[in-house]
Length: 154
Image 1 (cartoon, rainbow, N blue to C red):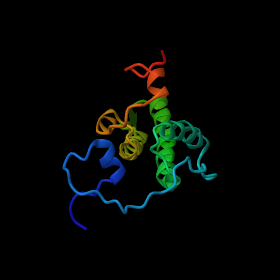
Image 2 (image 1 turned 45 degrees about the vertical axis):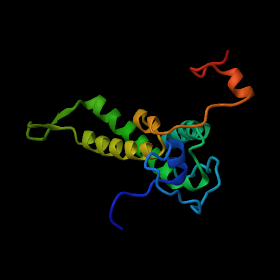
Image 3 (image 1 turned 135 degrees about the vertical axis):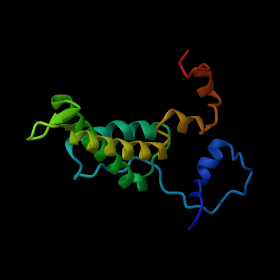
């Protein structure tokens, strides 16, 4: 299939359907909620799972179907943290056995993990520009009375 990937209807509604194109009202609606954390994730990835899933759930951007995507993000996060630890310990440049300076190989691995991580975060609205494209309904009733325009409780 050629062209741009279609945007989910829920996201079009949140963003305001700027193109005024017909909405796909028969789009599947997966059940919302935090998926179970896979047991195969590394300890650092499990810790990130707990942190990020709570944030995504608070914004209603997570469903049970997102388990694999979120697991991929968490493992890339753990890999990035591990590789950056090696880079910090050994430096950006290292010497070969012949004494020639080269870029630390862990830096390349860390950069790859970071790129993949940021792409997945973008899918979940995990960057300022991604969040700027999402418009949610303002709170109504009692919720509106409890928060001022900056989201702080009165």
